[in-house]
Amino acid sequence: MIPPPETILTDSSRVKCDGATDIRGGAALGHPRVWLEIDEHGYVDCGYCDRRFVLRGGPADGLDQAALPDIASGASV
Image (cartoon, rainbow, N blue to C red):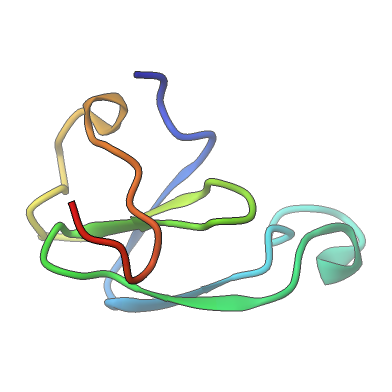
């Protein structure tokens, strides 16, 4: 597997993504804002930009992210 394009550590199990956090010009260059819920896997992937959000201290924190399957919000593995 290949690693996700960007991994963000977070302290919250509910995160938002608009794909433009670090893009000059803001959300106009990203995608619609979506709210994602990190479940028992300890991470979730944005369905638009594949950005991965990992819960700090959760089961996926510190693991090789390239070895983990994609998990979209609300999906189960």
